[in-house]
Length: 468
Image (spheres, rainbow, N blue to C red):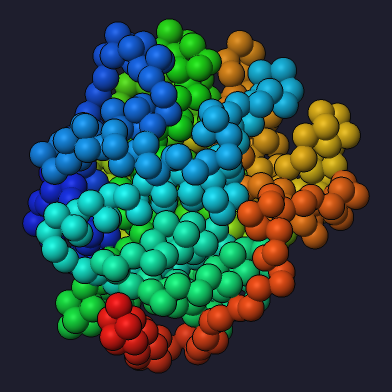
């Protein structure tokens, strides 16, 4: 399996290559040259697999030619061994036909663990095999950072620098990152928004001398391996609900578009996905696009669901590439126009193709709190604000006889203030995080300037490699 950039000016590369590269050198995102597909009989045969073996099976078609199935089975077994629920991603029926797929039973209590724990194993395998080291730089709106830190802490093969927007994550999210003391971890609070952090990471990739100097890599969902590692939980849920002999639908609270893109990718592989619905908060650029073809940037506004406080959804470029019939020149021109004007010119035919598969719903903070309260009052289900938005979106898009599976993206204890305000319940952190608020924090607060942040990353690498 080879991968090509959405912008067409990067050479085709293998799975192991794009795992370490992250972003393509032309600024685009890697996509598989062709979509692997499974037959109905092959899907049915997967029903009996454990979650780790299912994940290895799905990943094997994307890693073909780079990592063999037995190795993937070993890596997946290690990746999911520490999850607190035997089912890894259990389904809970919240209302008739409306299911919560709980993706928060990993070490940092968020869906990012589902992919990041596996990426940690994949990086270690490939870097050991190649006798190579890299520097991972990532931007986080709250959950990616802690998941990446947990997956890569203490590794001798890499240094990690995570950028988060200062004051725009929950206290639990921030402390899960900043209380980790391993020498290979650097946390930077950027004076700006998540979009500023994300732009900073992309600027570092565009700075070729810096990229080469530090061996830059990424674990944000701009890295295709992250998307590939998220596809299995959609497959598993669909199989449990009767696929491939029955259609299913998914709803996903969405910020950077990577999680719902994984569900869409599963449909490209032959899974019978009828409908995909995204949930947005007040930062509703994706909802505006899907409802009225209005992809226009606005200022990022803080909300009760900070992981979705995003206006530039990086992974949308991958869907755009497909909407434009995989024309890299058209994709590049559209993305450049978006950056220059703040508006994305998508022709009506391409927009209609997206609208046929995707629905959308926006809830502001007040409506989010009301949804959280109604879920608890009516079903006894305690949801974090992101999951509540997803469940509302799923309910809106639900069709008779077709299961609607909603991605529950975070444990309610990650957002205790919002949960308490909505329900009066004070959600407790699991035992392994019980001392989180007594631990000392360690991070740097830096201006949103490329040279300042690059210098901080250089100092961190020098200090880490000196002590390693």
